[in-house]
Image (cartoon, rainbow, N blue to C red):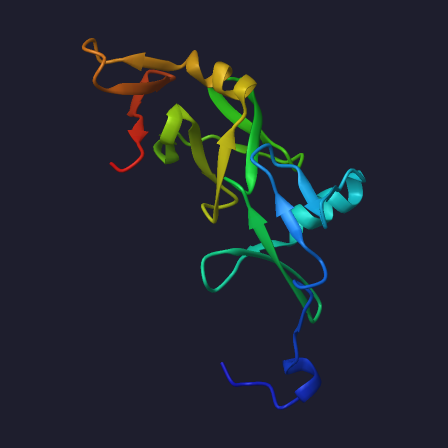
Length: 162
């Protein structure tokens, strides 16, 4: 890809020093310490979230970029939508996507996570969503390995570090 010859297009303003953005472990966004409660602004920030080149997170709008500090996971699974032998997950940004047990794992402190947004991000399960998915988790009999059993298919539940 050729570099742009337009000096204005090549300039990116870093708003991070002025606009402190933070996502807490419950998926709530904060700007300069104040929770963002306006639904449209909340959804807009969620939709603009990107992985930064260094592995962190940022939002970008036009030629402005702002770093986003994330306490745990940038998205939260708020609940499951169950039906017809499949499960979808409902995320804190109001979107739903199909649940894939192969990209589900148990992290530190027994917190469940999965990959979302085409595998780009990870999402932490809220307590209510954890209780919902727990109904599908079965033991191998010796309580060493656990599986998600959906529609007759058992998928090993990975543990952090495995």
